[in-house]
Image (cartoon, rainbow, N blue to C red):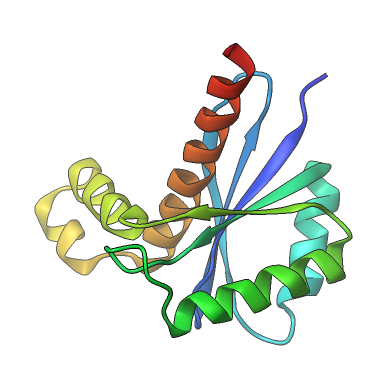
Length: 144
C-alpha cells in the first residue's frame, strides 16, 4: 500500500505544498498556503485529507553549502512542524529548487504569463521539486 508524503517549500509569506507517494515515486504540486497563524491548522487538514505519513521540507543553503539566516528559520519551522503534526520530518537540500520551478513554469506558459510569474504556482512547483528529489533518493537507496 503506498504511503503519501508531503513536500514543503518554506517561505516567509507563502508555503508551497506538494504531494507524492512511495508506490510510483512521483510528486505533484498541491497548493500554496499563506504563512500566517492559520498555517498549521490548514496543514493538518491537508495531512488528514491526503493521509500523509511523512513530511519533506526544503533546506535552503547557500551555493557553497553554508547555512544562512533562512536556514535557521527553516530548521525551527521543521521542529515546529514535527511538534504540531506528530509526523517524521526530513530536511532536503533545496538549492536551485525555486530557480528550477520558475524555469519549469516559464516553459509551460507563454512568455506573457511567464513574466507575471504566478508566485503560488512557482512555490507549489518548488515543493514538488524538493519532494521529487527526496523520492528519487529513496528509490535509489531501495535499489541498492
